[in-house]
Length: 278
Length: 251
Image (cartoon, rainbow over all chains, first blue to last red; front, side, top):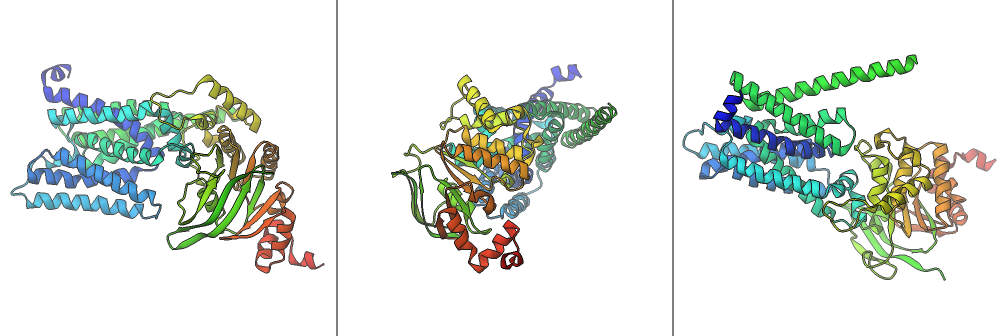
């Protein structure tokens, strides 16, 4: 295996993208899970398919199309959410399906069918190109810097937005920034697990971490480690038996989540029984 | 003469088609311990949020010590309704109260200084939850959570404290503790309290306002209570809250 990694560039790229993915997933994933933004993230992810289709149709990098569609979807859904009209659920559904239909439409307008389109839908960590990798590095650095540099502000804001507003913070700016960071994270993930499976990698590591630890910063740390474990295990399994990496990564992460959940339940139960006997 | 802290002139707020406040006028004076009562949907929470600039005004204006909120030296503390909070968020009591010490500007790699930490410990002690400092908030009871929110508001060192139903959803013993604490605080700062526990606050507050989209009564607590009690619609609400029945009253 190590020889393969040393020898092939695609394998090196795959490992670097696994690390990048884990970093953003760990941090943004925890926020998404805590703020109950899972469906919104799913909506943004599926909207990007329109951008991918447009990229194929007009002949530019599909991931760039995905990037712009993700930003527009994040800001659009975010804007409706702040209006507190109760329509955000509907808007998410509309963006979700509009993006998919646009993608299908754009690809239908093309002569022929691009064979690589499935790697955007279901992800293939082994087909990450140099351009993808550079984009992923830039986006990951942005996400990490924005969150870690202003960590205390984010912590207070995520717990209670009204309170940070009373403190005099620019909460609208923070909310918009958060939406953009979620969009960037999704773009990083698309090449690894694909549009359809993005939600799994945004939730499974954070959810698993939430079983293990209660502190926000530790949750982010454990979430990074879990998603590193998921992506690397998935990568090696998919390379060995030659199946879609996205599917394997998601499968591994959800199975691990279930195992950790059961272990935790079992241990807690035993502890409680011991305590009761005492 | 007592000083005007907040002057509310002709304020209207609506959510879409629904009017929450219509042409409301109210002045909050320094050292007021003001209770706000009224029916559900009467605009009590909206009034607080409007004063805190959390909801936009459709009409009218607010002046804070004769100027705007940002320019004035009024510091506002706010205790929201528990039901609006995310009680599962992974954060400790200490961290929540400490967050009141966040600076207004964004400071990269901000860390709380030792003064802020000491202040927070003092505040926790004052509210009587020093023992809970390291607890995760999802382990707290309703009453403990409420006290934590009061501590967070106090850590801003407010000149005026707003509380939105601080005793809803908590048991009798905790309610008493919260009211005792508020009574103590009322000697140090102006307090505005929204509540449904009318009889309990009659002995607490020094001014009572009855709010139903507009202010229907304002003044001495007992007078406001008696005045509103004589009105037939309100009396049914009062009966429910006080436990008195019509029968007992006529007897």
